[in-house]
Image (tube, rainbow, N blue to C red; front, side, top):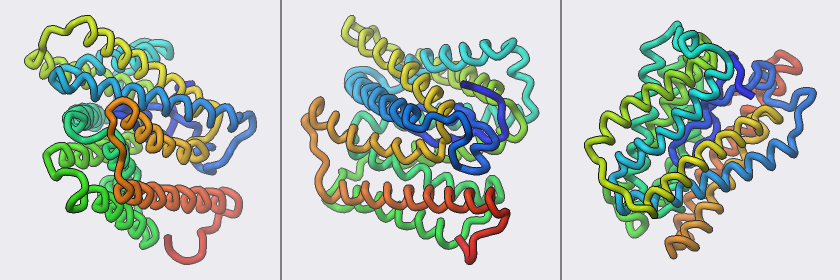
Length: 335
């Protein structure tokens, strides 16, 4: 269910494709808890299925970028995503109306940031193993916390700042000397997370000004134009196998986002978010089965540190939201 709303959480991420265009109600955003009519168990099931589908998409994308330019693959993936997002927009009303933004420059910048994220993730896929790349990607919720300070003026106390530091330490464990090779793939992966985190923060910012349909329309069109303008210069003829894999990527993109949309219509994002961490063990499994690569134990510890930091912040924020909604009084002490 897509609807305009003041809260627009970009809480799910896989393969650098946005879950942030999915809206949730202002009441759910405020309380962080289940509302009347929610079906939490069904929502959780759909999230887990969508994570599986996203992982398949990432695996096929990694296979594709070994033989074709990441810019070509990003362009073709975006064709599918743009068609899907614009389809959802026109279901709500005229497309021209959706482009009536109160913050067009912010909306365009969001689109540019998301494209940069997609390009960087595609470049990272060439050299970084799927499991390690997914592990590094887990740091983006913590980056959202960090970037919200200057961009949204949010006050972040020592608790959340400490969690951000711990998360970065986990990332450093993964790329430690003797861990991942410190090539440009790792740099691309970290930069991808950073761009996506800023995109999410700006999504929150424009969510107070524009409808979800408007944000989706700008994301789809800006990305379609940018990726195509660059991708055509990297085009190479594709054989039947390549075209079939691109088709799988497009289908899984739309299917996974459709499942996520339905999940968020059934249960609050704050309830569903922790289950998105299933993406890590799934990525480890796919990396071993498809690419014969098994994540090393130390890198796995680093991933666990990142996930733990993110989950602790989520639990803290949910508790604060529940207390605020029930008693309208702040928790004692600082964050």
